[in-house]
Each structure stands twice: as structure tokens, then as C-alpha cells.
Amino acid sequence: MKYLLFFFNLIFSLLGLGAFIIGLIIKFKKSLITDLTKDLVDESFSNELVAYILIILGVVILLIATCGCCGACKESTCLLLLYSFILIILILAQLGCAIFVGIKWNKIENIIEEELENVVKTKVGTGDDDTMLQALNYLQTTFKCCGGTNYKDYENSKYANVSSNNVPYSCCVLSKSVGDDGFDIFKTKKADVKDWTACNSDADFSSTTKTSNTDNLYVGGCLSSFVGMIKSSLFLFIGIVAGIWVFEIFCVVFACCVRSAILD
Image 1: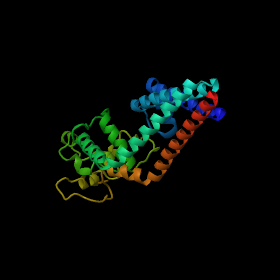
Image 2: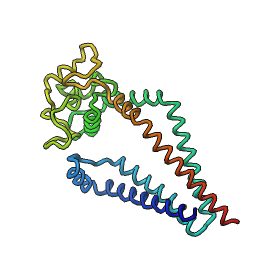
Image 3: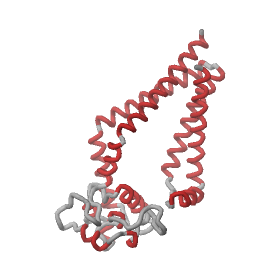
Image 4: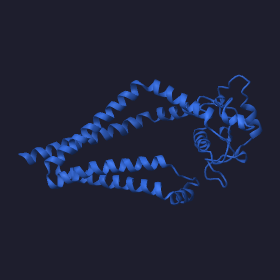
């Protein structure tokens, strides 16, 4: 058990260190990451949120796994106790979060929908450097959707008021896909659209709200598309989470058994 505990935590120490280093590279070497992703998938990448998440996650994993490694290797009852305590707190926190999300799912979904609709209405500009528009372009192109609830979220929006377009080009059925020459998923252009005139015409705010996609326009909101993707992968997600819990519980049991054997 001591050697298994050491081996498992050594692997996680390396994974934590890797996540930390990748986070630092994304944070401080954006040009390197952008060039690399351009070569691999013809997309640019520069997300500071991902960098911070990887850095924090890497540090947390590294600290916990180091406690486990040192505790097992040095047969330190204090480190093993600290390691077990932290893992138990994590297990309870994860379980609490899962229960909370399950109970409050509808409310969480409504809050996200309202916030996304507010972003579409008030924060999306028209410039090539507008970060909100770039984010929505990525979202709408990836999930083949338009707006938060549906395409009519753009009615009387900041975007529609300062441009001659009813909706962004990324709401339309495109003639290009990721990997095609000249296509940037963050900066969808008129030239990327299969039929822009028909798409803009379909996005008529004065007509009855369309409930299904046309040949040129995606009418459904991105939230429903995203939630649909989550639900379709729900069992896989539950399986992964359950696997993590089981592994953490085994680590706690191993640490307690090793500590008990040391004390005896």
C-alpha cells in the first residue's frame, strides 16, 4: 500500500507540474501557443482564463500529491494525516457541488440564460477586435446556434443597432469549416457564409419567431445547444466523476492504512 500510494501520487505530481507549466506557457508565451495551434488546427488560441485555471489546478494537485508522496516515502504520520484530511475535504466538496447543481439545475440554467441574453443585447460590438463578438462567433459556429435563447436576442441589440446586419455572420450556415484556408472561427466574415442575403432575410425580427433552422440561418439559442451536448454526455461525465471519487477514496483508505501500520 505504501508503494502504491507513492506511485499514484508521483504520477499526479507530474500531472500537476505539467498543468502548471502549460498554464504558465499559455499566460506568458501567447505567441508560441497561437503559432502551435495555428499549425495543428488552423485556429488561434489565447485564453487567459484557461491559463489561470491550469496554474491553480496544477499547484493544488502538486501540493496534495507531494504530501502523499512524502508521507508514504518518509513514513510521516503527520503528512499522511494532512493528505487524508485534504482528500476527505475535496471528496465532500465535490459531493456537495454535485448535489447543489442537481437540485438547483433549473435555476442555474435560467441565470445563465439571462446573463447570456444580456451579453448578446448589450455587450457585443461589431469590430474585428471585439472580444465578446469573437467569443460568440466561436460559440455560434461550434454549436450551430444564434444568440442565447434564439436569434431574436439580437433584436434592438448593440450589434444590430450599429450595423446593417440583423445577426452576426456566425449565425448563418457557412460555406467553410475549420481548417479551410482563410477561415478564422473567431472572426467569421461575410465571405464565409453560404448565402448572406438569405440568412439576413431569414433573421427578420418582425416576423413570427422561427422554431427550426432554415437552409441559411441557425435559429436556436446556444444555451439549449450547449445543455443538449452536456445531457448527451451525462453518463460519461458521471462515470468520470465517479471514477475520480473512487480513486480519491482508495487513496484515503491507503493513507489511513499506512499511517495505522506506522503507528503500530
